[in-house]
Image (cartoon, rainbow, N blue to C red; front, side, top):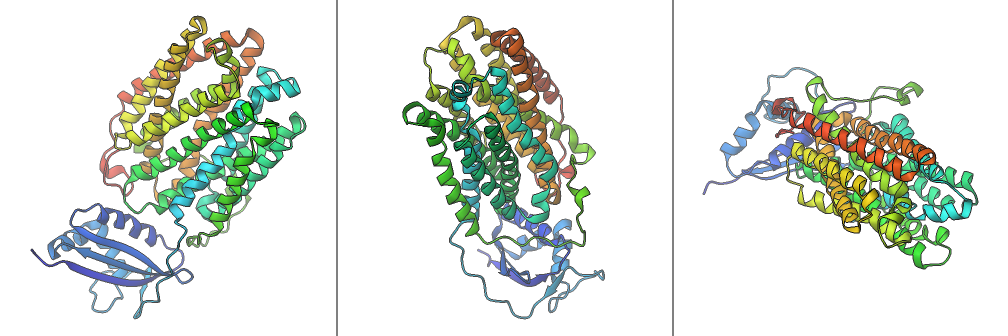
Length: 512
């Protein structure tokens, strides 16, 4: 057996450079190579950005093959240009400075950032979703109509959309951890105001706070998970993001429904678990050391925070938009249950109460989480197609059940909605991660969520308006019919969309 081959570089990044992101991409390529035994980038000093790159290969031949690849060779030349005994033909200005002695390595951090970012995302979205089974109780307390309930939901989603439009790129500029801390504080404050709300106006204010925070949580946490992912597995970051979203959104209505069904003063007590978990998540995030934020020469003005849609290059736009529209359908279908399920379920199933509506909403997202876990290795395009087909069946079965009032048909529509939600959310996020360059990932994630949130706002608002004029059953039939047609049409378009060639993907090794 041939001896292993090792090499170590110690270097310091200069300000205003993108080299560190390129090195991280190269590390993921090395870690995916079966001949690589170790390829680690160890930060020695946070303030001065001192790093140590340590690599171990099975043989010198494997080492040479990796280093001679064009993309890797350029990066190594920039690292090693001023290192002792290094040879290079580059004469351009350098992005690294070789150091004679490494600085001591920082003490091991006991608060695993990846796990706590997942926890914070789950807790944050849990607090935004627990209100769904409480809507009938608010209807009774304040005398609200179905249209008023949809307005409450749309105000929340509109605030989330405004946050994406104006603050969606904030994580790229200020760092994901700072934005996530602020967002969790904001959502916890919104939950407190929800618990003490005394009329519709005060409750609307709390929902605005929660809506603003929810988008900041999703964009910052998803960016953090993609940056903290060291395995090189793109699907892992996408699956973690969508899994935590589904789990949090599912736990919210289940916990809220259980408390509202059996505990006293449900419009206050339902918020207590999320408040306590929110405080824990905030504390955990402040125990995590913030990563270095790249310093740039650009001075941001108010114009930089104006709404902007970030799209990939022309060759990648069709699959990107297909993934966004599939997620838009997922939001549309789920928003139907999240806003009006307690109202239309009365005529479809023999069970009633907040716990029933809470579990019906939670089951959708729990099964969606299971679908995403099982489908983690499924091709992104196949995920989207399976999700759209499931939504078509879900819409048809739910529309038919308006007349049939069959519990089994309702269960089938819930199952198809869950599967469709899981496939579309996973497929859409996977496509975003694959087509987005690292420096545009937060902006493109915001664009992806903006399109998805529009699917929750516009159709839900139209459904509530129709329900007040032609009745809930007729409005629901129109909603299901239109959405079934849209998902079927998108499925056909997706089937005819060709796969993206590998060379068009920014720094990736596989097609979409």
